[in-house]
Length: 353
Ligand code: KG4
Ligand code: ZN
Image 1 (cartoon, rainbow, N blue to C red):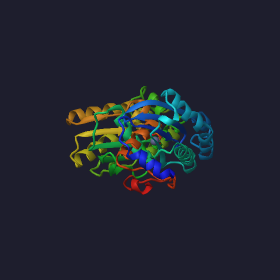
Image 2 (image 1 turned 90 degrees about the vertical axis):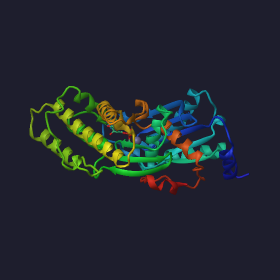
Image 3 (image 1 turned 30 degrees about the vertical axis):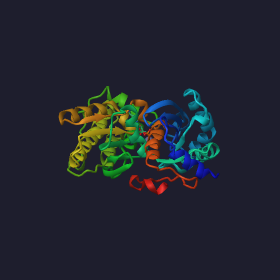
Image 4 (image 1 turned 45 degrees about the vertical axis):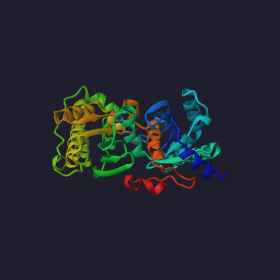
């Protein structure tokens, strides 16, 4: 029998426990995880390349792909070992296929294809953003669509209506910089290490968030969209023009401007579709001020608030395995001919199948 026939047969076999190996290499983390039935993480191993990229102040694509290729075998073996399983216990492989750095994605996709072929198991091409959203199911197994999810990371800031596990509608989003991108830029201006979001959060804890008003009429308007480039330039200009400025005050005030915008627009989007459930995802969702402010806003409005455990906020393979599980439930698995893509539109997820 050919690979595709065996994989199709395996995908349609009813099983009590479905164990999916997730592989994530879209940026600078090489990550593998095994997740059972979409919500139970049996293992998660991530090899971070941050120190390799730090001296360049950002991710260098060529270095990222080379190191993914070097590390992926060991990371996958580590995930199997941590779960106390062998390759033959894997029911399917889910791999990030878009969006991300093309060379980095290709390293994971090529490895996943080879392994899926060798094991004759179905392969599932996962959209990275759908993965971030699925991180919420791992932490809150009781969460069911529909809900509104803010996905805020280094490359994306979107507010998404999750109609069903794999049915999404983008309600709003940034017109320019992603939230993480803006935070990283100001962190860099403040002399903080890359990636700056978490360091800016620490510095902000020592500052006064009302010291500077980084105001934007657009961000407080009824539009579902928002913009960070204007306030980013305003903060950078102050840092360039005033030598004795209190850096902690800048960090706190800038963080406040970003967080308040995200909270306001997420609530606005949820109200526009009468949703009573709000979730957050992506690296920026690790920010405690964002988590607290959105939680308080939801409580005031009688909405339920969900956020992933910190380890599932930034890039990780468990979220990819979880998304893969819900895709497999809907027969959204692939043959081996799909390609990695640098761009990826959530409403075109099925294009990969
Ligand atoms: O989701 P992610 O790991 O990678 C992308 O898909 O982009 O997100 C990385 C982004 C970076 O911009 C990083 O600075 C930001 O998430 N980030 C944070 C925090 N932790 C990570 N931003 C604010 N506060 C944090 N605690
Ligand atoms: Zn991400």
